[in-house]
Length: 332
Image 1: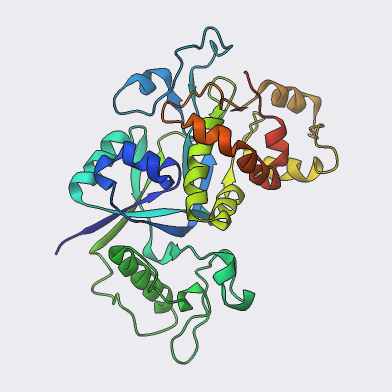
Image 2 (image 1 turned 30 degrees about the vertical axis):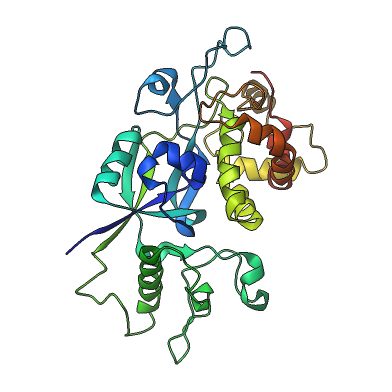
């Protein structure tokens, strides 16, 4: 039996231009937009300058750090994910062979490769294609099946427009897995268990939020947004909606506090509402997001693209994370 391997890309791998640099052999590969259940995307990985200088780590451009106020920066914060019930994360599904999978393992040092359950994989569908608005914007694994075995989710939509034939097989078997609980018919019976398909996600070894010495570079955000917008505006908005950790206040429950503070700051965007003065002081010290478009920290940045499309990207971000955007700084 030949094993089919797939990698779920949820950060810079979404961007075709960045993907070619990361994995040149995937230049002609089709990256299929997907939504994964039970995975939450966060700014929670960490790359040090030492890792950035290695051939296997991400890149950090600190050549002018002494003259641009970045001498205290010890690295940066790229994307991470964590498994969490009820969460959803969009990204791309990429078919790879064993050799390419090995290259990913080397490149993703600091991350651990883990499997994704087939039943949690859905194809991304833009909102204007959802049938009369009756299907949910975010897919759910809880399906109702009629007497003919047809589901009431986006599984109803034809797979004819899926460009990657291997990915189409994943969607078919994922749909069958979801039907299995309510129907005796399934492409993956109890003996087969779809064990000829493996979908992988790279999860960071340590879950560390962004902070002043390890900020989120806007140049890196722009690369991801470039990839999202190349798919659709709707896909880009879902990326922003489902990504957490844009700022950090030193508390453990960052995701919950981010949501809570977003509501509190709606009418007073310049005032951080927290439960104590101490928490407010912590927030002031944790400028976690730097606008480095004119002097990119991220070596794979595309300054021309960022400067040309920065206003459009910022408007999208403002719709979803206005409080965090107001705290983005030019220098740290």
